[in-house]
Length: 204
Ligand SMILES: [Zn+2]
Ligand SMILES: [Zn+2]
Image 1 (cartoon, rainbow, N blue to C red):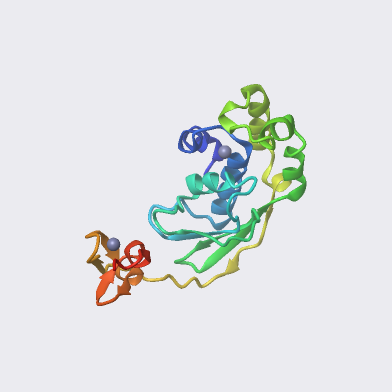
Image 2: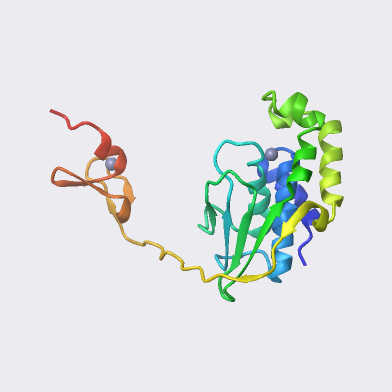
């Protein structure tokens, strides 16, 4: 069983500040791992399909999910589905099993009524500059909320995830001499180019 409290300090260091959304991510990710009965991903044995989008409130949540599940952008096993929601599916590839977890709307709405949100976050204050006395009690209350109160956790269901093979093919762009993964190459005249060089106007 993974305990989100054991990862809080690391998660705050990783993200650079303390924030409730990230802590919800730690709790939600831990609940998903524990439901599936799996450990944090060392490699890509788990896949996380996270429904957040870009540039929206509570997206910090994904950092909590990355820290606790070990599904990361760099390993390619964190995929953002861009739906603007906090739900996610965690898939155990070997056993073809998955669980879907969502923080409950009423709990998230209750954070939006706190001074942390109304006086600071919503007004664009950088999170690191919000006083500890406003942030710490919310973090503590999230940590001590039971999974049943905080989250909707589905039953385990079958999920046959087909992984895209990793590309090992690459070439050197004939204009800028930088390495490019083959699938991202463009033809420019009679040259193979990177996307940057392909977009530059041809010199006349
Ligand atoms: Zn944050
Ligand atoms: Zn180039």
